[in-house]
Length: 398
Image 1: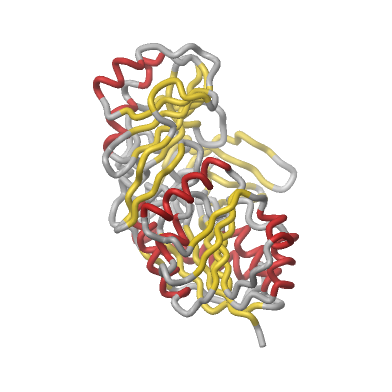
Image 2: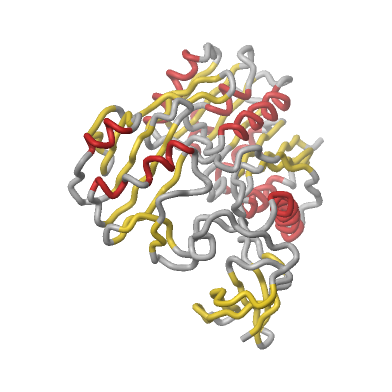
């Protein structure tokens, strides 16, 4: 069956119509004429798999990765980087509009580096290492990722030496090309010594147990140095992370006291808030808080505190009043309970950092009755994918 792709959806998939029913087709571009195989038939929509590109769109470019058409790791490698930036702007504005938010985003900061990721997670099934195929749990075997840093790509090809048959492996690297492997598998690992001799392998953690070396490394972003434990969140694109610091610093220069929720290892308040401003960071992962308390010493941010606590509870427990709150929640966004507490605390400025435009818009809609959106800037933290980082600046109404 021939289908014309008419536009992208908000997951980077092409959209067409078959018998007046919408069909989502990964790896296609608006303007493509394609043949597809139906792989999911739902009540209100279909999902198709591209089987033949009959006529390519003028927007289509040749993907640099030979696995692009099957691998689910990338979404937008078949259009130019500039077209991808336009797509992300349009996507976020569309989501804001659907949530009845009267704001248009005009600015997106691009990434210079397309081999940007300091962390990737690969699946292992029956000894094959790779990413899942689009819309499936079938592993697409790979020994090279066009999103990953060079040192990650060097070690990928030797992951089979570990003799893992089934599981998952996360590879993290830092500015010194040091590597930590985080493995979830019941298999007994082999040949770690061979990887140690060949690579700057600082640690191997299996099922949350350190079986070689350390469970952390040091990472540098701009002028700042951070201890990062194996299970602590850290931005995957250091260049864009540094630009995020600059935006936060610009928007906290007049603050007196800053509350940093979901603070991880303290990156945003340490890198983005001047030393003279008191900051309190909150994070639920104990390792991350241990890292943050060391990072404030390393970076001479003595006017900071970091505590291990569930964000949902913290506003009931602290006595100090804050004029600014920074929030960088997980993809699921901020709970209504936390948003309600922020509104009642009468905090004058909110800096909301998000990697998911849908949950950002959902939360901004709740906040919009009490806060005005002053600015939203996008940052291309994740080139060649549909994902985009956002930083929204809100001020209290009245």
